[in-house]
Image 1 (tube, rainbow, N blue to C red):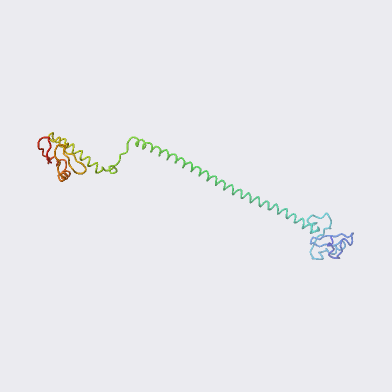
Image 2 (tube, helix red, strand yellow):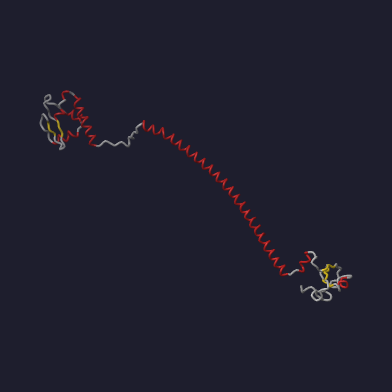
Length: 240
């Protein structure tokens, strides 16, 4: 180490191997020839009272570090720094991962609780749906039985109205039945007259009347025709 020298006479260990050097408690170095005069009663450099320690390999480690190579010390310090930094980063990552895992576990518990609640709610809804279907089926069964037992009736306002031709045919039929029920004396009157579509009247046992009498007779009702009828001689026919 080329920087060690006596702070009083400036001699170095390489110049005289017999010389011994001592380190004061105030941080100064003196050779064995100058140490007495430079430290009594106080340090010649700073003036403070001090103690002396010989420079050797038996010095405490914390003092020996001051006499080591600084580059080596810096290299070791960098290695120490990198070693400590790596462990520090690893510790931070582990704590962060553990914190994230705890958060995820909490979220997972909450989600599971929600899923359980939703499953219970879905099961309740399914039970209600089954009950509703059963009630609907129970209500539909008597309705179907009633529909089979009672035939539906068509309302009067929906029934088809009778046609004019059917009314005329029914009226003519009623008139013939009325003529038959009047009297035995007039029983042959229905056979005497025969109406056709041209409005002419043909007498089965008498003479044919004119078209005017035929039209007037068509306008009259069966009762009026029977009332106006006057027989000439029994059932031999007569004038209308």
